[in-house]
Every structure is written in structure tokens, then in C-alpha cells.
Length: 125
Image (cartoon, rainbow, N blue to C red; front, side, top):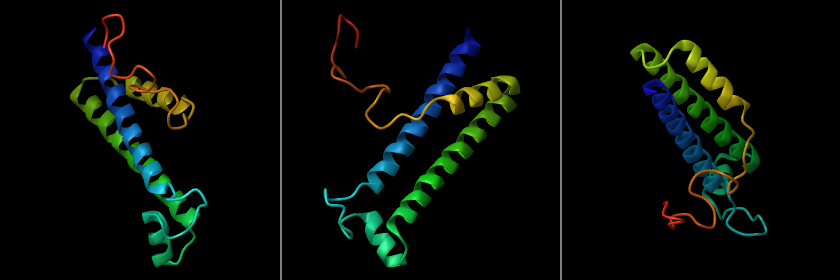
């Protein structure tokens, strides 16, 4: 029971890291107006300063975020294996499960989202 609880904690931490990274990337990438004008967002200004296409810069930010999240997950799982908290087989199984999940657009699914977020429902919070 103790191992399964630790594996759940690892999963929650990894999901939080992915969620924070995804939200940060989306916030940086959004344009300031509905017409998609340039110069209104940080990303557009950086692209202008560097003289590169804004889409190319946005793709680079997204890829860098994915790489950093993957590296953090690998380091965390390696640490848990070295501590003896989980086995290498469990770490591999968790990574396989995590990679097999479908990508979810922002606002669909996830913890703490929805109509009743933060409200008590039937005695539960």
C-alpha cells in the first residue's frame, strides 16, 4: 500500500509539472488581439528583435518546455529508483503510461476545473 501511494504521489507531481509547463507555454504564446497583430505580445516582440518568424519561436518554446519536463521526469524517476522507493520496472511502466495518454487541450479535463471547482458538493470539497 505504501508503494502504490508513493507512485500516486509521483504521478501527481509529474502531472503538476506538465500542467504548469503547458499553461506557461500557452500564456506566452497567445496573441494580444483577435486579429493576430504583431508586436502586442512578448513572443511577437522577441521574434521581431531576433528577426525570426513568430511561429518558429513559438514552436521552439514549446519544444524546449517539453524537453525540460521530460528531463525533470527522468531525473525524478531515476532518483526514486536510486532511493529504492520504486523499481526500474515501475519507473519504466509509469513513463510508458504517461507517454500513452492523449494530449488534452487547455480547459478540458484535469483537476480543479469545471463548474463546481472549489465548492462543496454533497459534503465533499
